[in-house]
Image 1 (cartoon, rainbow over the protein chains, first blue to last red):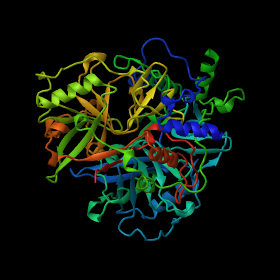
Image 2 (cartoon, rainbow over the protein chains, first blue to last red):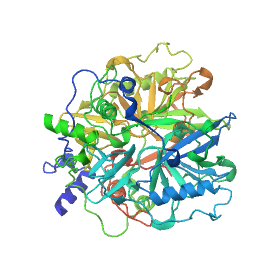
Image 3 (cartoon, chains in turn brown, red):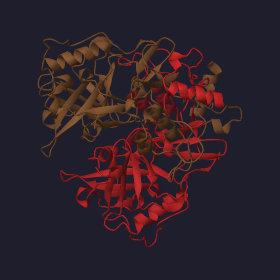
Image 4 (cartoon, each protein chain N blue to C red):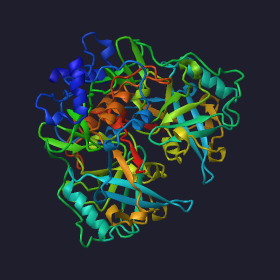
Length: 316
Length: 316
């Protein structure tokens, strides 16, 4: 192992091309990737048009949050977050308790770090303690591997984890003993201090750039944004350390964060998600993996976990 | 192969956990990744503070562009783009010729598609033909593998390519016969129509989201943004198809695009880039790969090509 490491370091230092002995990096193993289909790839609209109603599932109002964000033009934008109680049951329950006690009322987005995260908090008084919910909880960075929890394997090689896939719509990874949600675009996690158990959900963040997979298993992930990402990703970047805004007048206020079950039916955004264990989703993944159409001439034959967008649509 | 493909499809359909026979996805091969260092990871500021002056290189004014973007507050933001003549010599020469004939004067950003690209053009009259430069060129999607062009191998597994690394600061990939630049955050490429040879540089784009590596080898990449990404990534998303703005009054005008060699010295933004064949860059990569510090408790032991930011700093 030591000698391999030394060779790899040489490669990084530019010596690979100068020494005949240095090995090339290994080609990823991908023996169980579906073979290239014949002809051109079907388009996503065509795949979705051919999908069956039972391949879609509505969001569960008890496990969905709205963050309503007033816009400059006077309208109110809505960020819809699906929660993942299978992976962070205590944090999900706590964030719902915080929402229900009104903890998030008149909060704000306080941090926008380019190519990384948007983070929000109870900005009016960040030190205010919750009355019903908890300020901190024991970390839920991973959970034990459990075969009763859906996990649809993506056979394509992943840089970071031995196995990746989708768990009921959430991009996820696992090893022999554990499962965890991964940091892809739109992933929502729990801000914390250095102590693993210092987060609880009073501060949350969403990923707005290249998937920072180094955070996986280092932070509690509790959901993902299923609609409204563009409201977060297009905010001006903060100029302070780590992208924090330097003054409260730069904050972006949200009116509140609510559990959808508490929102009057007439005010809800009713969405359904293509099931990631459906045949149509498998077709979609393979069409992107082997994408070949009028524009794409060279199919990759591979697809990355964080390059797959799970379709969401209004319920008709 | 067929049977493997059938099994993988079953996995994608959720059957992996329901059948004892289905294999797990393969663990990526990573035998030549440097071993985990002892102790905590050095910070990037500490690594850079210890770097040597000869580990940095200035941008070459002949291979750098400025796009100056007036901001709402009256200031002018600057996007700095380093060009890659090793990979797209004809397109780089053409974009420089276009800049020098004034083709880009009073152009605009016409498209911002969330988690994908910002694209700009000569918006006042998109059909106007260049006088000196060319409207279209033969595609430069890849180039022949050439051992005289720097390529510092990243030994970590990559989803899309058999071998990845950095070529003089640019994230890149190669196989036995070809080399190409990869689509990471900040990569700049050449817009085109369906015909591979229909682009020339009159329309360019920059990647603002999760690396869309499916574009690799399907489009000509000619450089990357080394400063000013946040000016592009924070623009409002277009609401038309593919994120195009639906009306010219939504466009974001830039004053012009210039080759830095043509810019008076006093008006230049003088930057230097950490050489990706330097020992300090190798240290930086390994510190992120095995990141373990006050906040990060679980090192991944892997790092993705597009998760590595090449340091840029003002020349003192």
